[in-house]
Image: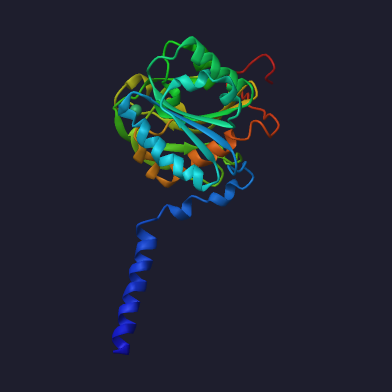
Amino acid sequence: MINKIYSVSCQLMVLAFFFLCTVNPAAASVPSDQADELPSLKGKKVLMVWGGWEGHEPRQFTEKIKPHLEKLGAIVTVSDSLGVYTNEKLMASFDLIIQSWTMGQISGEQEKGLLNAVRNGAGIAGVHGGLGDSFRNNPGYQYMVGGQWVAHPGGVIDHTVEITNQNDPVTRGIKDFKIKSEQYYLHVDPNMKVLATTTFNADHDDWIDGAVIPVVWKKTYGKGRVFYFAVGHVAKDFDTPEAMEILTRGIRWASGSKYLPKEEWVSPVYPGKNSK
Ligand SMILES: [Zn+2]
């Protein structure tokens, strides 16, 4: 009998070991302790706004991320209307705005409300088309985000996210990772800090073979911190541990605009008149 119990418990231990080693292999490769210096979300007021094209699952994305942020101490308000951007007093109370709104239309008053809030120090964070393909007729909005989606050659494809900055706490310690999702080709503001990229091949559009396009960036708009992550075609993209870790860290970074000094964000990619 004792032998039998021993044998069963050994089997359970082997099973547990097998589970830890095989089911969750990426956990060890995503070191969350590398981001300790990032601002905490404890007590931070976060506005999550969702809507627009449903193919990007804005509701599912919001429902997935909200409890995660609440676990980290954030106080989250959700709105499924852009009308919230016109409430100046309410907007001034938020530390961070997370928008998931692909395409659609924003009124002049709503755009002004959003841009003013960020300029005055609310951070803004978002992924994929929810921030990077929101309001195609609004260059003022795109000036704030720092980029605009233009293509995803081949649709949902296997590609690699290359971590190009190991000094920044948003990506430090995270290794390059593969993901099956849309590989976003974006028109980007060259004056922002790029933390990760992806390299295109000739499989779908031969003229972009070798093109390197940012996947993760941070920048400033007025006093507000802007964080963008091109992954996130559907909510399950964030089941990839590296993707969830980068998103969480970027959100934490962007939530600190009102409390921390402005960071140097311009990183020229062209040889300008001051280059040696
Ligand atoms: Zn998409």
